Image 1: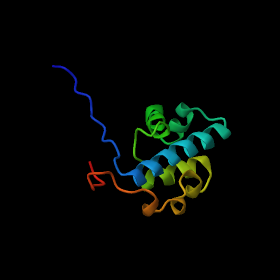
Image 2: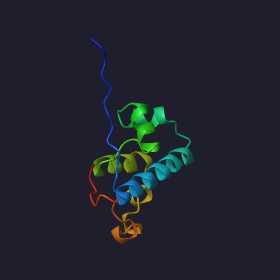
Image 3: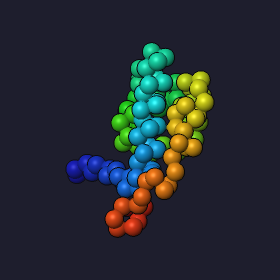
Image 4: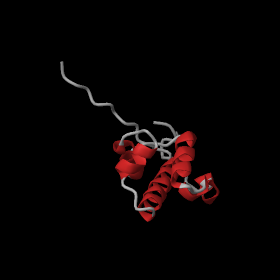
Length: 102
């Protein structure tokens, strides 16, 4: 039997995409400023480095619990990973089909 790859959902909502992209950039910057590898940060969180890599490449949509765990591991505030106040829905209109969900 062949292996099937898990298909990742693409975030179509521009607001959600912006939040995930900002989180990815901030996570990478915070990790690098502390001279941590993805592998080491993954070890600190009891997860694989590939999970950290997925977050940093905007390939995974983090849950609030992930943001909290990462902030704790990096000893920073969750707001340093993603500033929710910096985004407003009116600045990120919905896609042409009018649906935020895929």
